[in-house]
Length: 301
Image (cartoon, rainbow, N blue to C red; front, side):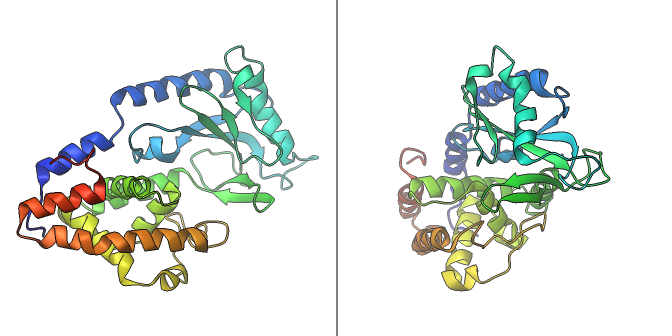
């Protein structure tokens, strides 16, 4: 355990990190407005539900966007009866009620290679068209299918399964898993290193629960040490699955080799400083190190 847990200091840190409640209020209002226009409307009568950092409570500073799945009343294209629907037809059908709305018509944006339909609102919104697995119209059953433009085909995806996995992990990790995600996302910004939030979640999900033991001064140091203990190439060679198990974390279409190398280098550089901050018996030195790592504007003196 850390010699100086700095409990009050880390409470202030996370208080500075977490979005103000006004962000959640605005996001909820926007989601409600979109539901009223889009849910159950048009040819495909989509059912909406949230995913992403806002839904998983892993957003930091602000709510940068609202991620919505629009699960359409349609089987995976080509597996049902009739002529079927292609990607462009599905996107057009989902977008149609928005384009007919005076509120949203001028704010809809998507193209032939888009992953989602974007709405340029106060908090940007991304609507992900999705369709059912063949022989299923129960929205509670996953996977569903989404169109991935980088591979040019429909692929299975999960939203609720991923959310439920993170919730279980947070409980088994003593409530420290979600705060750890937020801390690592903050380090991403603090040290200007590229990493997708979903990938950070998947990486931390692969860690054993004991790594999250203790307070922030313990688990942040333990996570960085765990990353640094193995070389970047050895990490990338591992077959680490996403929480839902549908694909591998390290691949050319997920956490690419180049971005992983940069991330690993940055986190490994921080690891010995976090270790010193955890073990030093000099409280002032511990504070100094955490302020350098996390930022003086967010970690109090």
